[in-house]
Image (cartoon, rainbow, N blue to C red; front, side, top):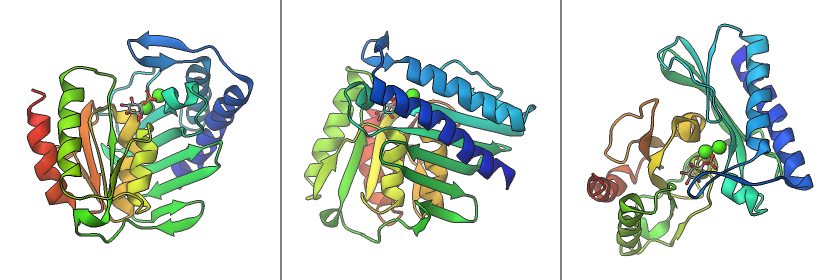
Length: 262
Ligand code: IPD
Ligand code: CA
Ligand code: CA
């Protein structure tokens, strides 16, 4: 499938730009309170979009750093040129380039690459999920007492943060092994797909944060919905991903606390 090849090529191009800036250093700017951006984000997006448009001039591309798109288009690419900018800015080598291709509103291809650790995650509809070429699957745990739970915090420091913390507390009370906050949503979803965490949730994410990871979780045998159990939209949304066996139980907690944000 040509889209899968192009997605990998584009991820490599973007990731190499990001990795170069990571090694050489780059000025950190604030988009708004707590939300950082650098030339690495902007240049990576530009190069990724150029690569996609070279191959598919009539496809729509939605990107975090300024590329707007008709999300109802038949062919839609959704890209995060640098997911985990806060880690990147603090010299923590846990960030990624995330590229998804959607056909008629459905994810068909997802590629996520951490260029520093050279970790490549690929999902293609009906073909499964791989990590560095090895097929991966979600975990088989059915009980909270056997898993880690991943969480993400959006940039908000108000009610969304308060409710996320309340949900975290409730997860701790279920005797889970622990909570993890790694700071890169696309890789958090890969962690679910690879069976490292039993579930991951975040109350507010943008489509570029979860578009590729969404397919990765599904192709690895997991389940992904909003924190209220609905199908994910191609717009800002809460996200709950799990190994499937834990979905109902996790949902019961995220749903209640998410409703308190409204
Ligand atoms: C962020 C990361 C982070 C998540 C934030 C996202 P960015 O993306 O994925 O893990 O908690 O909600 O916005 O801004 O680094 O591309
Ligand atoms: Ca992101
Ligand atoms: Ca980003």
